[in-house]
Image 1: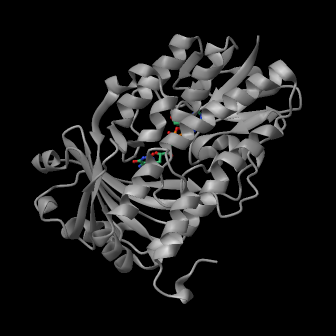
Image 2 (image 1 turned 90 degrees about the vertical axis):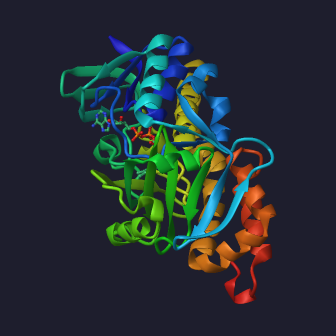
Length: 379
Ligand SMILES: Cc1cc2nc3c(=O)[nH]c(=O)nc-3n(C[C@H](O)[C@H](O)[C@H](O)COP(=O)(O)OP(=O)(O)OC[C@H]3O[C@@H](n4cnc5c(N)ncnc54)[C@H](O)[C@@H]3O)c2cc1C
């Protein structure tokens, strides 16, 4: 048979696309090389704005709500703020959250095949052929949602402009997790051009660091220092750390995310926010937009390039401002940690961005207004 759409990868991007299209009555085949639940290195903080995109019962897989953050600089606490408008995010375990999304896609009618790896693709104007570790499938369209090391992107020569930043994280069991119940810790001095985090996660703490400095930057040294500077991590034995790639698009990216009948979504398309590396919301949303585009291609015979236009308009224009904010904050972490300490309004404003009530363009304008000297002004 020819499937209306074949989806590669069942993380948040692929599952959301599969759920959307199957609910609309299209025939969907979705493959993932892993069997769910599977491990995924991730802080597991889903921003509040994702709530409206998720099925109504998604809170059944939320561990706890996050109401704000402790801000520190090189291990020294500077400020602690809870937002006044409600939660800024939700903590999930990716094992449970992703398995839940896969189940939703399956219940909606998508044919899900786990433990089946994509090996090759033939992408033509009127069809796609997928060669997997277990078979060969034909589809009308293909959505490549296979994450940071996307084979779909590599095979088709797409998204070459993506930048892959190294991150390191670990999950640790500790009684201190209780102290963090509705707060995350963010340390913007923990690593050059990046930040360190401590997130509470189901009785554990997820700790990690990420930097946008350059692709060959080795964060291990900073990760060990980050741990050393936290008394509550002093006697902790870290059994396993994960180094992983965080993909984002450069400023003013050409955004090559469509083939003849193929669309890339989520990390495969480099859709993480440069300031904080948030990717779950953008994966879910781009998966849905990819689904909407495929549906409109069937219904109205519209053009596949509309997908790229929508991602440029809805994500990349914002990410360009997020880049400005990132460069500004990470080039002067001490200055900004002092600003955060005395300026609750700027923190509240960022919480609104996480809640989907404000934009990065407004946020970066606010940052610019706080800048001390013209030579620091953003271009
Ligand atoms: C250390 C770290 C911490 C992070 N913390 C956060 C956070 O707190 N909040 C946040 O919003 N974002 C966070 N992110 C980013 C977030 O994890 C990603 O943006 C998000 O998972 C992207 O979802 P996705 O569906 O595009 O890809 P993924 O979740 O990576 O899913 C891709 C799927 O494709 C499958 N796949 C890959 N290759 C193949 C193949 N050849 N054949 C078949 N299947 C294949 C994989 O098995 C996987 O299931 C973090 C990232 C890292 C690295």
